[in-house]
Image 1 (tube, helix red, strand yellow):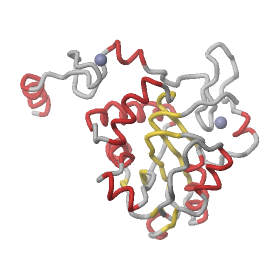
Image 2 (cartoon, rainbow, N blue to C red; image 1 turned 180 degrees about the horizontal axis):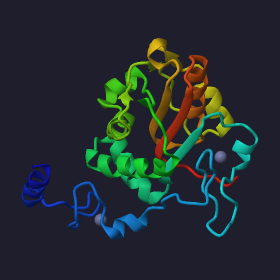
Image 3 (cartoon, rainbow, N blue to C red; image 1 turned 90 degrees about the horizontal axis):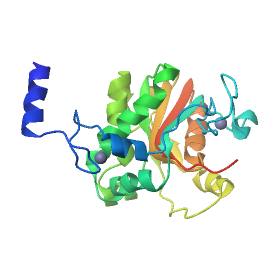
Length: 240
Ligand SMILES: [Zn+2]
Ligand SMILES: [Zn+2]
């Protein structure tokens, strides 16, 4: 029945690549040309935070980047589907600012894909909260749009109300240390009973320095959460 319905849907609305508009096999897929334009993160990468290493390095099974090796990342795992560059920026910025929701499926699918080999057991999927003032201005939290299909995939609870975020003006171009200080103390746990002892997957559209994930991890651990994972669609990659 579902198959028949999909066939009907494909007949009425032929599936097209959301970026260039060329015909594709199924809804929510990219055409081959657009797909290869992205810098998808594959192995070798940091086993803990997903930082991509140059392709020709053989670093063993569980390589770690200098940050994770130094114990600066307390999350269990972080993964990002692709590198933040001109191609990913082109679908990220409209997604963030002008409700270009046609990209939602390809972004969340790529995020589910990059988590696949970790075989995570997830109780709660939590989009990184937006301050109420921003939410009101924008009308939606783009991280929630990405988190919804991801929660469905893991058969987990989508939690948008256990943590709140205080409004703080934009950080602009700051370094990792300043970003960490800027985000410190902005999150507040509202429903400790709902998250205690749970395994939580945080979802965001872009990871810049990781400061937001680190701060959320800090307060979630304090509230007794048993595991914290994070996934973003793309990630700013600096040389380390
Ligand atoms: Zn295309
Ligand atoms: Zn790392």
